[in-house]
Length: 115
Length: 413
Ligand SMILES: Cc1ncc(COP(=O)(O)O)c(C=O)c1O
Image 1 (cartoon, rainbow over the protein chains, first blue to last red):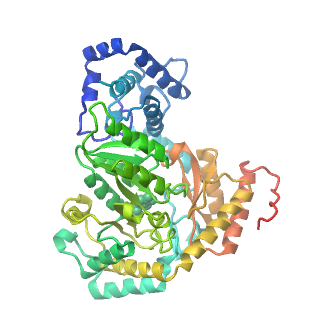
Image 2 (image 1 turned 180 degrees about the vertical axis):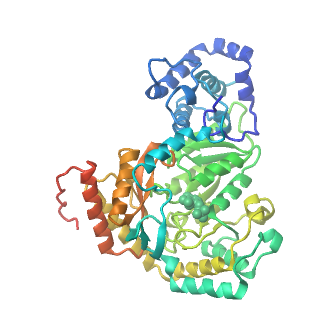
Image 3 (image 1 turned 135 degrees about the vertical axis):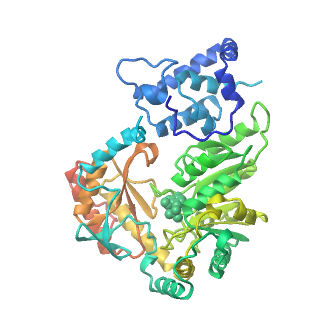
């Protein structure tokens, strides 16, 4: 699958990514922070709408760099906006591993979750 | 999948570009005549896109120094500093640059690109945090691909955006994250010619205990009473832990450097791979750079002339209605509505005997298409007035400017 941005060499695997990859844990998080997750998805969609192609709606499974006309630099700029909106910082190596809207939403929600 | 399939989009864009006639990325300077003139496509062309800010490429004293050095020490060093040793001239150059900044240490690299690549990727290691301006130069982005540190971008020239990111590291859910913070800035940005609000950035970095690295590639010579760059003009040299620069622009040669007061700085000589595993600068280049640095110190009028020329071009184009970068700078970026207009405009200028750079996405911030002009201290007023006239004509022809000639505002030249 094509990566979100120019693929960065990511020797650092963060705990956040592992969480995102683990569906079980992600589901629990969705339950406890369901409202926030929907909000994150909504915000992502607002940013991505200008890059929609044809009639196909943007969903959680939309592969950002492939299904839309957005380029890698614009993706990084969108991430910067989302970072400030949800008060999280997403390292570039983590961005490089994100492909879908769902993955982006989970990353933001997970990084933003306070213990 | 073929090896080049992944570049299909780029190949297509490139084909588009070439349909305009000339390929802006493969211009041939048939003969370079002076810092401001070359023969291109058989005609004498005015150069306003070569980063030759002080026009020192043909400075007789720099040329003589280079020639003499070749006679004395040969054409090349045939190896790196760690393998073949340092020539006395390398060491002398490093001492002179360190003194120029009033810093204790200096390392010279074979290009500025290698200086950024090596220093930035090495300074910030595993467990550290690298915070870079969103509009950083490719050499800084490439350093980010090599580092083990976590990399986060902040909004261009926005100290509050940097502060938010430093604050999040401090207030993370695991508490104040350990690890060094290294913030990377540029003195003057290479596409739009705008400068960083350095004082404000430095204040934020101090507040959060972050190291500051500033790349003065386009500001060396141009800014500060002694030409040290933005760090000097904003009075924060002592707060800039690492200053990087290049010999390839104002100093008219090639090479890069990094200066610092850090007592352990020299450890970089045996850790930075872009320093260790590439040949060192040849004697001729080192000699011409040393002389160019003397010229920069001895002839502050070159800086005045450069800024006078900036004002002539910037204010001239502005008065005609062009959309420009946000402030006067040795680089003047002219916004055009899209890629094809930019390339068409660029070509029309070349046909009219004026060479500038064309910059289109993805090499530009925010997907803008630009004509990138860079000024030289030895451009004449006549050359630049002529350029404004030519660009105004082409601008009307391309519908970028309204076809009504603009009345000059009262008081304007
Ligand atoms: C901001 C910036 N940094 C670094 C460099 C690299 O300089 P050099 O030409 O010495 O590799 C450049 C030049 O392209 C630049 O614009």
